Image (cartoon, rainbow, N blue to C red; front, top):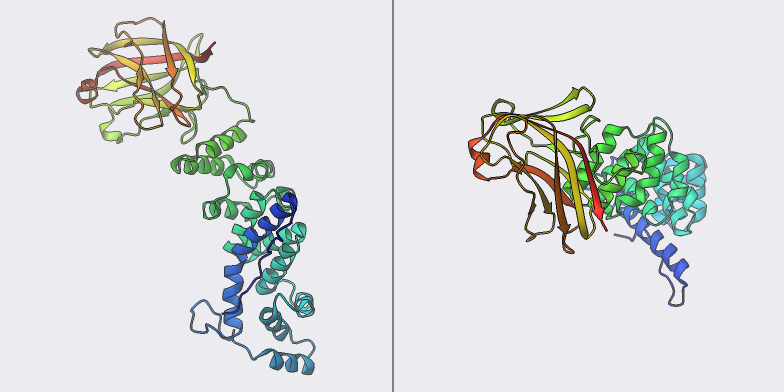
Length: 391
């Protein structure tokens, strides 16, 4: 099969900036190469047996196509096939094909590849967006991701408008390109302002990034959802509804019919909402509740208030800090007394070790492991939590 695209090869003496631009072009072109190779192979009859080739995609040789054009200068199909056969060598064929068939997907791919090859990012961006918006071209979506990842979000931002869907396609295919999600944040922020991405979609991306272990990208998107400024301990007083899948408090998932603990945010006079855990006597999940935190090495103090109502547990509950890095032992608070019917304070000091990893999980658990199996009765409520680093 003929090579569809000649990728830019930087000369030995090329400067750092030109090298970055050339490598960026090569990376973007690589995603278009697969699409263009296939389409040219279909056109020149190299792989007519492929089910991806459209009926009638095979054509005569270049001389035959030129004869057709000579007989009929408006033969759009002949110009398109000739441009595909000769690309990227013959600019005249491509210009004629673009004039006669400006929205033809194969012509758009060729034009985008040509624009990228000469570093015309603005033109390339518009053509790639058209391929994604109107032709659902996944390779073009991947190329847009690489374009953003090589520092060209400025040429993509003008194409974000209410009703467009290309950004969603780019984010969906982002893992294929190895481009970090952080490179997409200017587009994500603009897309949210334009109504292209709603909060539910953005939370879905946060959840997917967390599942993939991309903690930094997940947290960057979480910050974008919340005005780029959140406290280390989010929703510390439980006044806001819990946001599942992000960096808020996450209650344990349990089968409803066998739930060992029920979570509710209830209004309390003089306190606003508090988080209440009501135990059913069934076995308890571990942890009962957790929040993932970005904490650097150092000492910290967790403070808050709690109230226990007819709580029947031998050793009560404890706060636990668990690093995400393997082979790091958990850090446990003293057990919270179970007979406190009135609000009372608690305090938990801990030291985050150097090898803790990207995030740590602040967890609420039964103080004794056996009580997860035996279950508990009664209720516990928490309010007014805070987390501070100690100097």
